[in-house]
Image 1 (tube, rainbow, N blue to C red):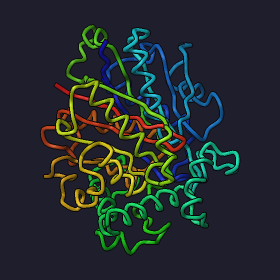
Image 2: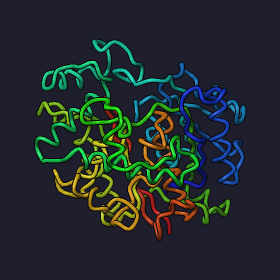
Image 3: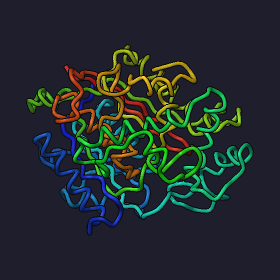
Length: 396
């Protein structure tokens, strides 16, 4: 059974404490926008998976009460930075499994200012779900005083530079591209363009990563209405529908840890396997894709994901971004929204916001950031601990 996205909505992603609102206010804004986009009422929704990391248990129910009090099941989901796409995946499974014809996937986050700790809860490393991951990092690189998430990805960047000759300028080129893309995105937390030199000159967070190569903490929400083919036909929603062609989630395997490499422990093997499954299921390959929203939590992760998706060979990702192949006029447009680096990264909302952007792109309604002729899109969302979700969508 096929599934389709027929409505999307999101709030502007903002620096924490910028606006005097609660997470349920964000959810109402994003969820209401998605329902309005689909042209349906909340009463049509039969299931609601809700993703978030920093709010209390059953915050999902409190959030959707602002949309309606219909008594439908609400599921609370936490999968670290892959939380939003995990909620979307559950929505798709409800539809494709024939359980429900109309499901609302919702994700939100109200965060604190400052860098993340050792996991979404910022808790004790000894009991953290990602303690094993940080143990790999510490064994190879030691443990410094810089923010731990920046540290583990920064160490992955160092390994990539040592192994393949990747340069600091190539890493900075990712940040420059994504900040430049965000200029045309009214939902982005930042809308300023920077040169490679300006990005290199910014404050160092953990060598070689500077502040303008790191995703910020953010407040925000995103939502998507996922429906069956029957629902599309009965409601006449074909002009809005974007098909979810294939989707896969993977978790860590022995490959993530056995090498002792930060490149592996931050999720490149998970991403590679999730992409392989999606390409196999869909019958489409990376060369069929026009536009990509991927998890650039740090600039190095965009480079690692190029390799995991098969956009280039191992070690060639720095040259790929430098060549212009991943921006307008190139082979693909990657992160036209500005990505996590510039659009922002409210953990629970990120994965759904990626699909909102792809839906607008495939409908041809992305305004100044529109990718000409986009028909096939790919989303990649990853969380340490670990989960990697890859989603293929198509229009027409």
